[in-house]
Structure formats: structure tokens, C-alpha cells
Image (cartoon, rainbow, N blue to C red; front, side):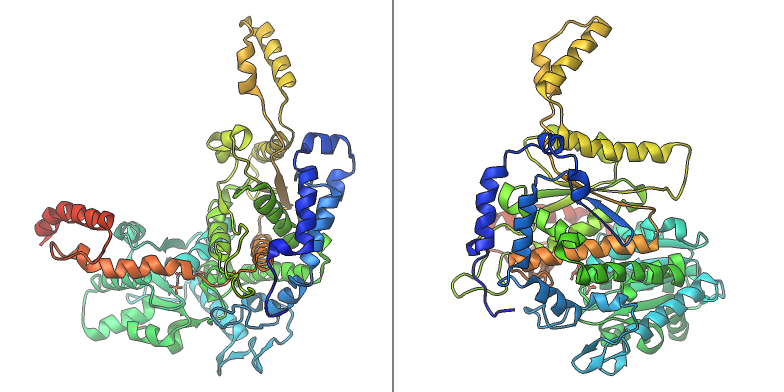
Length: 580
Ligand code: G6Q
């Protein structure tokens, strides 16, 4: 990779796309399909048990050729960037770190040497990927065999994960997604929000003597997590019949474990780092950490074998990503299509629609993965004076499972003035075959992709309306035709797999991780930092005392901020006094 890079928009490969866009922007998917019987087959990829049909995108063969040229551009250096990530080079340049979540699922038994050390075995003299994974699996097994007991001798049955952002969304999403594989004797709850109602509700009905808290925090300094962990510790202690310091220490050792990269803070909290800490490392970004010990709740829920299968699925995609030519590379193709819509068509919103209720948290998970990674504008390798991008980067990512979404926001997808590219995700088989439910679910998935792409012309709408009027005796109204017109030409990808099992979930996540990475490389941003979340945190800690106090100065120049805090003070005051 060269030190600095020309503007993306100045690259000849980009300019060729700009020109091509003018020629093809108005082509309609209806015609593209009609004129080309081989389109679906040509614009599909099947590998690692994942089938991607990307034919319902507003592309021609030439578009794909030009997008692939962009991906191959020497100046962008995507191939080198992929290799640099997978081999542990410090590609997170703004934080001076490697990005090695792929090492966490390296199932190849090959060493991964970073700074002269095989990180699979040890990191900075401490345990590396494999010893920690073994510890995670051993611990998960003990819980599943009801061998881990609480202070009263009762087995642990409730797992409460306390963590936020990357220390919450991954395991919360995955435990839900793989619920059919989980041990039903165990209960899993996830607490992230500093809003006290989150912890309070999560603890409802739980017996402290049977509850294990996993305090998941890379830094172990996160406000929400430390406050919730302290409150949870208090909840445990106040349930003890004898509250001596010794009893508290013993209870803590039995009911609290930590997942963190900061052993010192873990020890300060009272958790023994030797016994009850599951370590991970600074080169695992929060939103990429579900493969690390952050996945402990998942390992407990589905068992070590399934957890390893989950890692294995992701590893298969790592291999696919590394070795497949870009034309057959699922993450690369998805990334290029995203760029085509964001940067050329100007479609800045993008929906993920899993036709699978178990993937209910998947859109939220991807939202963090994508928006925290690529919601940036500072360039990574600028020429001096061009520090900021002059092209769009990460889109707004959102979604809901189908068919629910169909009864909510699909109206806008079909007829709204915004065009929102979608990813549909579905599975050939259901984990719960219930009569014909699954066939109906799949019929809806496929139908939606066709309806979005092909639409319904005004002539078709009119013909249908006339038939309906004849059938029902209703008078024909021409003015209704535009309301029944579907413009179509709304692009989507469809990702299919046989079933949602642990390896498939691993594959899906890894596909999106790499897609986001490819886009970040092309956009010349660092997908692995998140400075954008800091300013709000800083201000919150400055404003906290002003909210806690009944009066006194409010440390803000901003009149709206002062007004809001004054209002809060006026309305909080009586309650605080009452409580005191
Ligand atoms: C993810 C982010 C962020 C992080 C949380 C929790 O990539 O860095 O979501 O995971 O802020 O941080 P801790 O794990 O340090 O508590």
C-alpha cells in the first residue's frame, strides 16, 4: 500500500464508473431480466453453503466489470489491505493496532505470528487465542453440566451478561439466533443500558443464588457497564444471609466473572483475574469481538461444540474472502454493490431483512458493525490538504425480520420516494417445521424481492383494477391507478442458506464484517476506530454534576442545554426529596 492516495473520485476507475452510470442509471430491472435469460445465473455466487443472488441489482455486465476494476485498483490496494488485516499488520492506524478478530476463528492450526509472537498461543507473555478459547469452553461445559455452584450450593442456572455496544450486541444477537441449540435449563439475560430499568427488569424473578454475572467490558471502564456491575454486585450481596466481608468475597468469586482486556481494573472490582477473568486483547475491536471470550454467553448457551462450529463457519468465510477472485467473492461483491448505490445513485439508506424471527437482533448487530465502522469522513491516507473524504461513506443501516416488516415499513420500500437497497436473508429449512409456515415465509421473501425489482406498470395496475371492478360491481376510477402503480427497479440482494445453524450464523456475520472492511478500504477511512462516540461521553460526564445538583451553575455555553437541564431539575426535585 502506498503512503498516500489520490482522491477516490480522481481515480480513472472511478471516472469510468461515473461515465458508465450516466448510461445505465435509468435502465429498469424489468427490462434487464426480460432481455437476458442468463442474468440470474450469471449474477449469483454459491460457496461455503451460502447462495448469493445479486441479479436484482441495477447493474449490467459492464457495471460489474468496472466495479471490479475499482476493487483491483493498485492505488486502492484492496488485495494488500486484506492480506495486511489477516496477517496482523497494524492497519488500525489511528490507534496503532492490528485488527485480528479473524485470529479468534483461525481453525487452521497454523500459527499467526504478530510482533514475533504466535498469538494463537500467547500474547505479551499471557495466554493467547487458543488457551482462552479452551478456558471459555471448559467453563461453558461446567455451567451446562450444572457443576458451577453458587454460594448456597445451588447450581448456576441464570446467566446475566452486563456489557454494552460490542460487549452486548454480538452475544445477545447470537444467543437469540441460536436459541434452538441452547440448553433450555439455563436462562440468559443481557443488560446494557445505564437506564436502571434495564437491570431491574433483567433481574426480575431471578434467584441470586443461581445467578452468574458476566461483566463484559474490554476496557472495564465503561460507565454503563461498571455502574450496572456495581448494582448487580449489591443485589447479590444483599441476598446473602450473612454479610461478612468474607461471605461477600466468596459470593463474588462464585457469581461474577469478567471478560476484559484490562486485568487490573477487573481485580479492582473484586474479580480474581487468574480464576475468573476471560482475557481478550486490544486488537479485537468491540464490534468484532463476538468470536472472543465476549462470546462466553453463547458458548454457555449452545455448548462448546456449537460455539466452535460458529467460529468454524466464520473461518470458512475468511478463507473464501482471502482466496476467491473478487468476481466470486461474496463480501467483495456486496461491498461493491453498496458503493454503486451510495456513491453513484445516492441511495444512503440500506435495509437488512432476515426472513427468520430468530435473527431479530441481526439488523441491530449489523447497524453497529456498519455504522460504527464506516460512519466516518477523515481519510486514512490523504494527500496533504485533502484530509476529509469528498464522497459519501457508510449508509444508514436498519431492518426488521420479515414478514413483520412487510406489515410496517415495506410500503415505503415499494412506493416511497426514497429507494432503499435491501438484503433479504432466508433459509431453506426451518428449525421448527410448523405445518406450511416455512413455505409461506419463503414465498413472501421471494415475492418481495420480485415485487421490488419488477414492480407493476400503470397499464397492469389499470387492467387489474378494471377486472376487480367487473368482479365486484365497483365503479372504475382512473384516479386510483397511480395509487396502485409500483415503480419497481428497487434493488436487493438475496442471501440463502440451508438452515440457521451455528456455522451459518458465523458465516453470515463474517460476510458482513468483510463487506464493511472492503468498503472502508475503498472509501479510504479507518473502519476500526470509533472516535465519533467520544464527544457525547465527555459532555455527559461534564453535565452529570449539574443534573445531580438541585441548583448551581450549568457548565454549558449552549442555551438549549441550559434550558433542558433547568427543566429536568425543576421536574426531578420533588421526587429526589421524596426519596430522601
Ligand atoms: C465497538 C465499540 C463499542 C464498545 C463499547 C463497550 O466496537 O468500541 O461499542 O464495544 O463501548 O466498550 P467496553 O467493552 O470497553 O465496555
